[in-house]
Image (cartoon, rainbow, N blue to C red; front, side, top):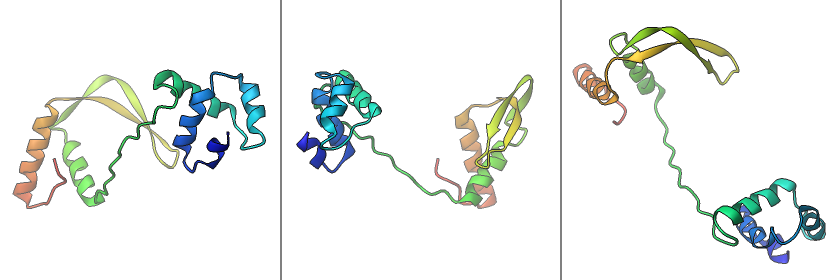
Length: 138
């Protein structure tokens, strides 16, 4: 429990807690940890899940996420191109609801694409060449 308290990262705390999370009941674990660092029910559940799925004490794998900034002018140019009636046709049934960041909900009719994604991208790149517009990457 001292090692659990002194570790700086949450992922290593989860790893340590997963070593003994199944040995004691939730109430006992919470009582034992009160003197060191209080535990929550969800922490114990996460540790037990980790022990069951990955194994007790196994290092938790982190997924690498890459983020890039897209210029909105280029995004809007692509969206305008893709939303042209050449690429889709309306279907007679159903709508999808899109929730915006502001909380506003928009009902959008379901559509069916008439060409494949690859063809759409190739035509967009050709369109950008003709207009001498620097597109987003493929």
